[in-house]
Length: 321
Length: 260
Image (cartoon, rainbow over all chains, first blue to last red; front, side, top):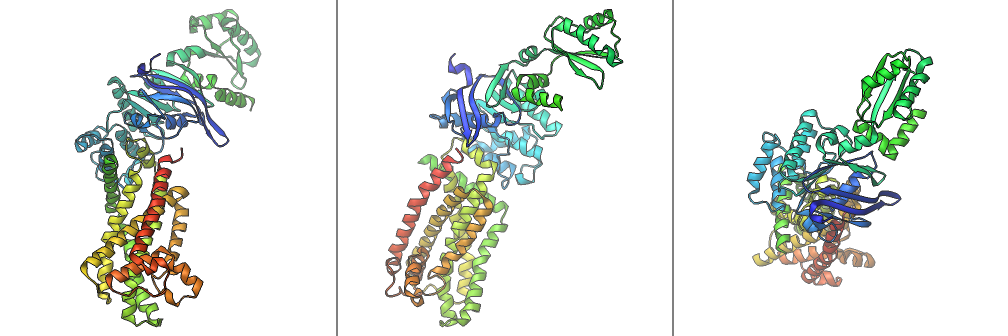
């Protein structure tokens, strides 16, 4: 495991804020040139992880290398190789869009900051608003300017903390296109998100963060396979529900869960050979009348709910309620 | 060092652009000393033992220095405000000099103060104040004034970074209006009771005010004053050196550490 193949490599990162143990040993490895989606519930430590990896916070324990440089000892070298867009807009509202980008360009030692500024304003659809104070921008425009500011000097590693939270669909699509474009050009992107669809669409790898640790890692497909597909049948009356459950149990070996209001029973199947016709045939043979049957491939929502402790406890609570 | 100069200049430019884009606050802060000159000079001045024009001549250097001490307030407010803006985070992730942000703020403040001094001086001339000493001394007086402003702003920046709360900074900063009241800015300290006079004369504002009055030739150095007032130019320079020596490193350290 050489550091050069990993754009981000952290070992045992810990951070406390008083009583709150935000990170409890975060081990993260992001291969260079890939998009890594850091997924997790609120309070899992996603933002703290980004703030540590971008030198905004100092770790209490553990170490990390970003773009080949030690986070603490070589913070300046790290800073000159990364781009950051945090959750809160990090642009100066008193300056215009153009003035913001020129300032950051100058501070990043960009040659010809005016040209680069014009190019980015155009790319992010801000040319028309370029000479208005950024405080008059809409949320979407501000986020786009923020992203443009992170790209003023092409970063080796780009950190995006919930880049599309609260964005309109047009801005969201733009952000996605930008991320894909950067990845195609070889920039490593680490993005945190609560939108599973976003991670599914953009990320090569997902790190599922829960309670300050990485709970699972892998490609979206691998994580979904870990969780399995969800089979559900709806029957006309409650009497046959148990019978249906027995068939599902026999087919999948999973633990059936009931939704008695809808006379439905569902089960998780990790057997890739199970198909909908097979399922329907088995139930029909057993004499179970069916109103509806479905076999849904797992979504990242399922991954999220089933592979994080937070997700599991929440679901348990929901079921109990 | 060249990195600090380069980044500091960029940050100075940022502050000046902010003011140009949003000049309201600047106009407000600059008209304040002018209205104080008119109120103090004509309203309070009418009840003082000193004749009107003499008091206004006495008051102009005092108000210049009192306004310069207001750098504590503006420094605090701006620094506290900046820590709450997301942009402070961006600066911290840039490969720039850590000291450039506070330096740019303090330098911009001096530029603005220098510009704001012009209308105030014109009103001063209109109400009877004159430069009665040599031109070199007058230039030295303005230089000293700006140096004092620079030092006060650094003190404010440190306090602003420490409180991190715009509202608290605003209120605490407002209290700096009281500082010139216990100095020779508005009244001669010779009339104060013994212990109060000592306190007032050890107020840095008194030393700088006395130095300005001396350099402008408006009033002689009072007899029997405490050391910084009895040697006003040396006293003022020393006060500035102490303020800068204490608050520049503190502010830079506080800024670099942020919330880490």
